[in-house]
Length: 369
Image 1 (cartoon, rainbow, N blue to C red):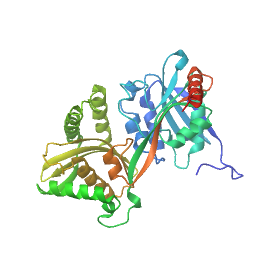
Image 2: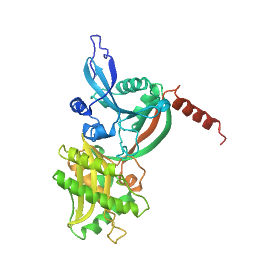
Image 3: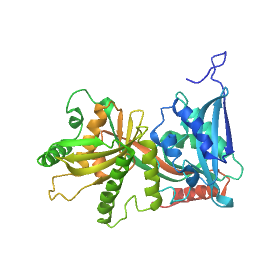
Image 4: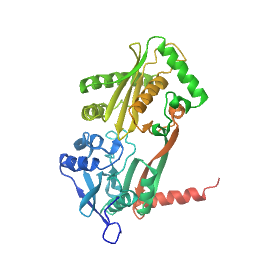
């Protein structure tokens, strides 16, 4: 819980926003607060600080203090023209530099801080002179509610399901995860595992060093790109910056046990690679590359690889295996629950952004069905 005064009332928050000349000076404070936070990986300095000097051309740091103690941090980037100047939370506002997709985005808060701290930070950001609104990408519903309470008008709201497996809700014992799935998914998964196991024992392993992890990342990118090009699309790693960002992220995160490059095999033959993030028992399945060359329609490399990774996470005592945003069939099949993430603009009501959002909302309200 936050600090209380002598009457038992929680002491007030004070939020400051200031430009940042040197982002390297932010790391020490961010890491110290991380140690007092249960925030997901995407709010760690491993992610936020990766190539930060390149991604944040005009950074603004929000600091929330309670009784002089740091309890919240949020890094924004200021961008846009004179009448549509925004602060992007945890992003640059440039599509190329934001190609590393952020999810579970939000302020970094100390344990025990919640809606009040989020609200105070968003209010302070919206009050910054010259700002028309905030860009909030991959945020949880509580942050959208805080943005509304801060007086903003939400525009361009797009919500996406984020399927997940709550590992700590599963009963003890072998096979508990499979029994939580539908009969059809169990059948497909068991059949796929049998087909692969016919070529040798199934196994999953984590890259043991940064060089090995980078080698596996390269292999994942090749498989990922081939699968997406076969569908007529470039895939997630088509951007050179995307590749460079994740090479840097692997080098930062593997030594901290926050980034996992996993390789699933059957008798030594590669089934696929998974690129996962982890923090505080929350595993995020971020990207993957699978070998679809096996001429067997019942061999499902994605299902088998994720099943092996989920069982690995369960054995390690992790609480959640998060498939992140997207309504892909395999995610729905393997998940035991779902949450929601959202992408939106939080505009000041009297800004051009806010007036345009209100006009669109009014027009849609009177449009005939």
